[in-house]
Image 1 (spheres, rainbow, N blue to C red):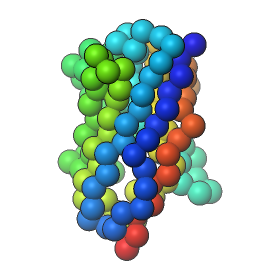
Image 2: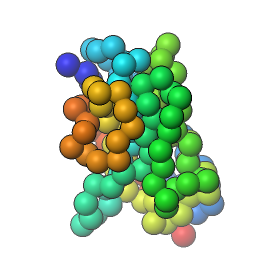
Image 3: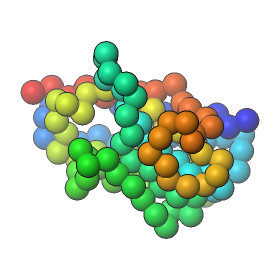
Length: 124
């Protein structure tokens, strides 16, 4: 059983930056594909970014390409999401997820474990 704990959310002005972290425990982190999803009030959970188990491949939603960067440190069992040039439409609860198959899927059904989420609010 893998436990995921997100941190780093908060309130930031438009154009600012935040770095989210997701610490994993209870499993072999280096084997899991990792991702970030987000969910705004009244909307479905949507894909943001993903990274393969090895860190050798990444995938991004079109809405965040060029602004967000996903990375991982397998020695620290942690995945990160660096968010730059934030916009009010980035406001959401951000969730970390782990996929046992090791890939970087964009769909929620391919992920086996989820964190509790961290709130990101971008003011205009």
